[in-house]
Image 1 (tube, helix red, strand yellow):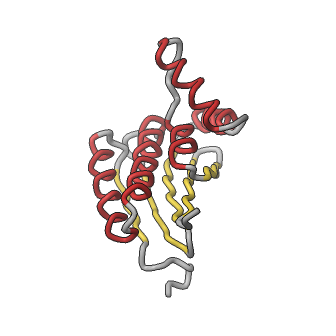
Image 2 (tube, helix red, strand yellow):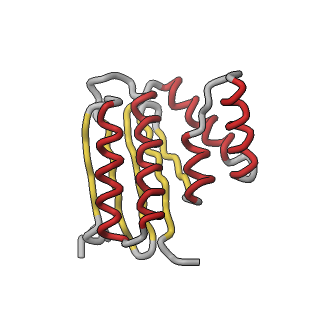
Amino acid sequence: MDPEGRSSDYLELRFAPRWTYISCVRKFVTSFFLIGLADKERAEQISMAASELLENAVKYASDQETTLRIAIVRRNNEVDLCVCNAAEPQQVNILRREFALIHAGPAEEIYLKRMEAAATGGEQSRLGLIRIRYESGATLRLETTETDVSMHAIFSLETP
């Protein structure tokens, strides 16, 4: 057993914040968890969350010279997916506000409002985080400093 409490199902990737990498990472994460979980739906939910979090990280990365880090740790009956990136202080503040907004009510209600807003074209869709919360039931956790962001999506592996 790893001294940090990780199981053998641990994955970490580091790369520059480029849009072209996101679909490759999503396919890899899906394949990785299809083998490890034998639960296709949960594997797809985890890879969808990875894709959404990576899109946010690329969108808000402070510059193209920084590194994104995606780490996936399986402990006991949960998977902790974490994406870390550097960001400008104003972007960190935007993310903090967005995080508070998506937790300001029931996930379904917020998701449907965002879908409606996106359909009318009135503002940016900002669907990624609420999509993770609503579609996968993952718990989101945000850790920030003035210039760094770590967004976690935590998935229960217990069957209801």
